[in-house]
Image (cartoon, rainbow, N blue to C red; front, side):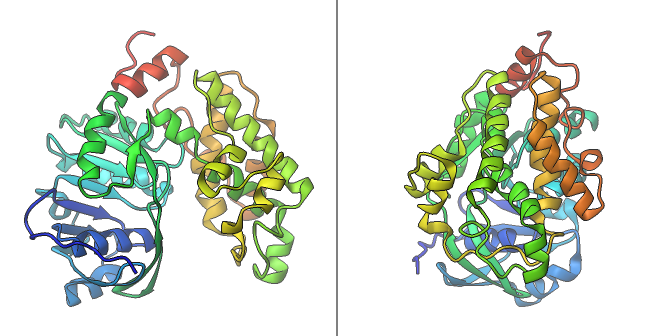
Length: 375
């Protein structure tokens, strides 16, 4: 169990956590336990009513204690009023909704962080703000992954299994990443500079593992209700060949934008010290994946979130940059058939990211300076 150093309430940045799911509850409770003023917003009032009644969130596991919440509400204007940092902790499918809700109430100097951005999250939020003519000078940031591994165990209780050691985070525009990291690191030393949002978006390794592995194990998931080890048993040498192809296409799209993407095999070595000459070998050498079961159903966030918000933006960028992504498109198509949902039509395309018609130079300038210029 980690001991959390307290601080005097009312000092330091004031937070609004948007989303009361597993990650949002963990973040709101932990921030409050550390002594920061925290508002918690959820679009459904029923979910946060027990928190409003008890006055906070009970944490157990890696962090233990009671985090007293300043305000738990479904009123977005009240939630963001007077706060310094807005931590968005909802599935990426909800980023546009949150952006549209907060847009009228933003003020100069506020920071908005997507936890995580998946692929193109900050770009989509920026596009929404531009369309809604937001005048406030705000910093939009996205984390490469979620800080907490946690589960809600009761209406006002959350168990934190662990907190990641290092999370790259980048701002849009990229030239404000140092400002973003400085603001976050006084609270979360785990956040480190992530260069720019193109890099955090395209180094989204979940895009490689989650959708393809779920699609290729669909029959086994449905017949066993997920009673098998997702990574250790679900990834055979032939399945790993497909994952390698997805990964190579992702890295190729990153290269078309002018930067080197980290391969999934390199990421496994960096994150878990798992070596291997192939992706299959690296996964088999990763003790961190042992014991993790598959999802119990196909209609799972590995498809309904990761396909439209991770694979679709990579494939859409690939089309825009004339970089083929046939394997990724095949996974999108099969996932759409499995769940009878057109993930491309609801997904985060180049148009929704506000990049339609942009040259590579304009996309890079937008990521760095926040303005595409004239190419």
